[in-house]
Image (tube, rainbow, N blue to C red; front, top):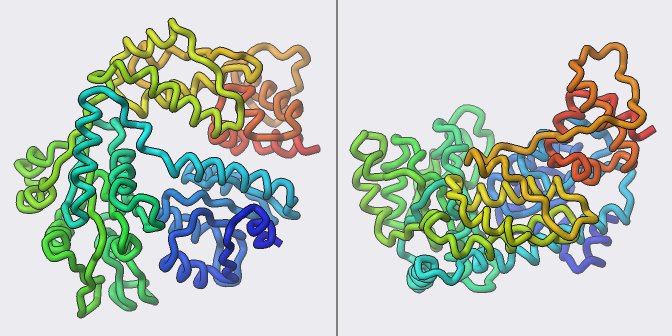
Length: 441
């Protein structure tokens, strides 16, 4: 049934009855989206999602389960799950979810190019990336402050290199991989290569074959693995852990860092020869404060993305708000600008044509996460007697209960009305699970 719906919506489904079959398919094909049942013959979709998300971070994942678990839903959402559907599965809910996926994929197809404005510094960055794109064998190092958009620049380079070809873009957050598993994750491992390796495991380099391998936060690569990474870059060959033969890599290699690799090398944390091998074609992204004339246009672009994400009309920015944004130094760069706009959008009424700009994070420069704004409820629902809550917690509890009732338990709509992200609301429901059950009654 699910495959039929996918076909009617213009997709080409690949149906796998087990995790093993899905793993094998995902190693051969770069899928646009994955739909997972949680209980499968050879394991849980929850565990496969973690593996799949690491290898295919750009593919939206939808979990389908007949046994909903709120704690699990919270964890999955935090780790990037696109949506969580329950059985019996309603066709209209699946169709609506696939429509949201198509919107995200359609936007992502052009993502990255809009990031480069028309300032002189960003025109120079774009020209550098286009120049690097002509030579797929050249190693590219992207540097810049945290939040400056190094990942977006890497995707733009991928697009400049391959155009519309359906080739993989594998992004690896080096800081997120345990040091003792780094070599196996990157290069793969043969059966029996280490304790628990009961079958052959292809690595991320294999997954990026004929496409782009992007190592973000490359300064965090364990020192013990840096020699093998150096050999890989020099020879364009790699050997899986426990293997006797080498394999060739035909693709582009891109690395990024917000640290000075020269300083890391002086401190003994980074190999100097690897630094020289990485720093062949370097592209430095300027911080947002050095291109203030682009902040207004970038804010409009990001606000449009966020409005699509939350499936609502895009509000307009007031002239005084544009002035405030342009004057801010943005120590967190583009990521901070996005956080401010997302926080503001969630606090703006859907009926309002104007964005209610949240200046709190701008004042401190911290980009603090959204907090719940509560007002006295007209008819406060009672707090369960077994709960020992402070007056503020009790008020928050009642507001969530009332809003869930008004939205028929809809998490996204309730979160928007409360001024929270869906993830933040799910965390509160994990703390007070009876609110979820009472909203459904």
